[in-house]
Amino acid sequence: METNPNSSGTKKILVSALIALALVNAVTLYFMFSEKKEKQEVIVQKDNVEQDYKNVSDTLDAKRDEIGKLRGQNADMDRQVTEKQALIDQEKSSLDSLYAGNKLTAAELNRARRLITTYEVSIASLQKQVAEYEVKTQVLTQKTEQLTTDLTCEKETTSQLTEQNQGLTKKVDAGSFLQIAKVDVEAVRRKHDGKEVPVDKAKAAESLKISFETGVNKVLDPGKVSLYVRIINPHGETIAINEQGSGVIPTADESAKRIEYTKKEDINWTQSNKKVVMYWNRYIKDPGVYRVEVYQSGKVVGHGAVHLI
Image 1 (cartoon, rainbow, N blue to C red):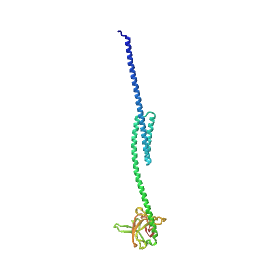
Image 2 (cartoon, rainbow, N blue to C red):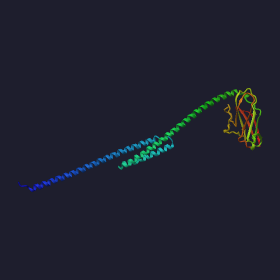
Image 3 (tube, rainbow, N blue to C red):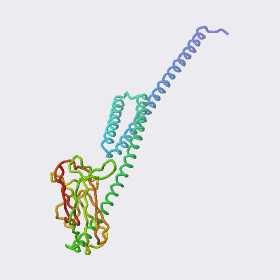
């Protein structure tokens, strides 16, 4: 049987063409699948970036709100809160701009996450400050409450004393006052041997020695009697030093003029004569007349004077 050479050549050409077509189809399919895969990966990456952006943005909002709750403690705290919120607003604005321009990257998001970590540290520090401030405030509140309680007690005590003074006012009459006939006042100093000697020069005086006798009074009830000694300097001023026991002479008459006293002397009154001696050594260096008045229940019951040159 005779073979047709043209038929054999045609078959070879057809086979080659089919093989080439298969290769072209395979390459085309490869590139199609590769492009589709790349598109899918891009979509996934974009979705991931969008999700990360939303998470970071929400976290920044949450931290801003958390910091805002710390406002209102004091001026310094409010200043720090304002600064932190401004930084968060700045970071959010930057991320929003990048996201809107389709330029937001994972690196930018990671940088924002690191900033969030620093904000968390700052929030913890501010919260600690708030806790310490609240403790201090609580202590001050307790002290204020205690002072209020003490003031209330003091008012009650004052009210009781006022009632007692009113009762004493009714009881005290002219016969209840001491009759101090004479108050001796002299300037003295002590020698090296300890002996006390009188002096007449102001610069040489170490102390004013004030002495008197109460006399007998059977009307005045036994018990503690407070005598208030007032020393008046040559300028007409009362010598008074609170640290040395000076104060204001108490009186039952609230409308009466307030009079300062120099020194107070409490005696145990037994209705019999008592000799009282006291000393004063401050502000007595000016020459002139030093007058002394002795008060009992707001009334002068004795007086004396000394002239120093």
